Image (cartoon, rainbow, N blue to C red):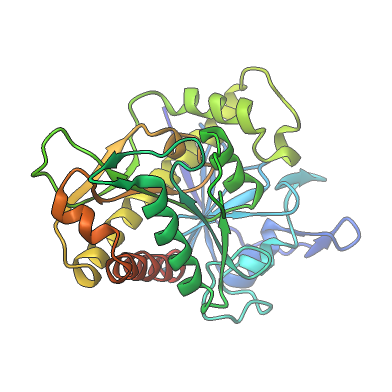
Length: 334
């Protein structure tokens, strides 16, 4: 049975410990009059103000602020009986005097990091119909998105492939992990047995099996958060399962929100049929260490839509819709 205790911390403690490398939780709470909720069942600590919710887990080198996950350069841990946070926490803390930027949804380098994934490539052409190859269409769209996003100083773009090469599915999620991505966007084109089917779909990961199993799968493949887990290749402990259950739940909710934003932007910018926001177990969604969405831009098996998808003008409309959604997300996840 979970027992939650609400505590107002009114203690006065030294703010910095360990040669100035950390700040205590008590000092953060004292400075900003925060309320603490501590869940004894899973060790989760929540800091609250009227507008902000911050979730912390001891021994995790990261935190969430209003649902957005942030990497920290050291784990949150107890020192001398006091819970301490690394100073990198102050770079993302919403009320920090060192963070006056309008957009607080940034990691330590001050940028919202996006991995753009052009599906298929190289020896894998993807769907083929009406003389069109999926790998060519999606690559062209992704490059256009990258050009549009280059105008935004707060957004940094990475690509799973920037030429016509084959990238294994596992390598795509690994790229997101390696770059510390805040968002993973995979672009595809669809196919159907019916030539009349057309329109765009937006997918986020489905929770069809236990998050703890997914956590183990993720860690074994990518050794996520090496500062915390090291090179561990064994089964996750109960605590480690709790950590990933917490993170994956956050990521799925954020991906669902982003998929809805994409759907709205497609309706405005592209004007073609939007079939809906859906859940799926696509590999790149399952294995992404951050919120991830897969876009099916249209059906190559539909003659009219295939003709549109090879059009530079139509590709630009799609690229603009994706760009608008990413820009909105970079400010939405504060």
